[in-house]
Amino acid sequence: MLGQRGSRLSQSRATEIEEELRAERAARQELDGQVSHERSRKEAAQQQVLCLEYELDGKEAALQVAERALDRRDAELQQVQLQVRLRQEGAAGTTNSDEIRVKALRQQLAERERQLDLKDQHISRLLSVLRQHRSIFVDEDSSTACYSTDLSLGSHTLAPQLMTR
Image (tube, rainbow, N blue to C red; front, side, top):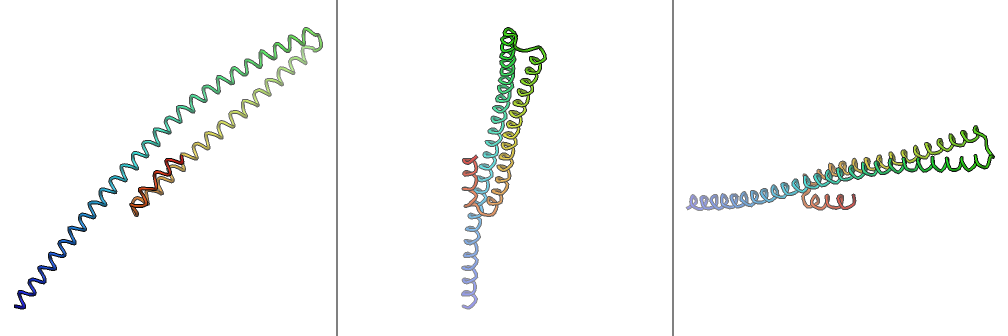
């Protein structure tokens, strides 16, 4: 009788342990699925960031081309304006050729300085864009830690980063 009772208890305990094991396996499978889903979301977000970066690079290149064309047109316009002014002054007979040459050189110098300032501003903008892109990848690396430790937090961590950038 004791043997049957002990056998029933151990069989009952074994059944209970098997149920716990099945529940743990199911929970693990669910967590594995969540991890897989979060990895694919992360990869998709990274691909989206890369596409946006390529698009931004293309637009920046087009902007540079337009800025160069504008600079050339501006220089041509200033040159024509200078020639018109010099002809007007020459017609009036108020200046000599050295003064005209000095004015032309000063105006060219001022234009070159303006172009350098524009280029400095453009370089500053590009550096700020580069810093922003670096911070995106640093933020993504830190959010990866959330994915591996707390899945419920990780699912909400990536979306705000993409929306604010």
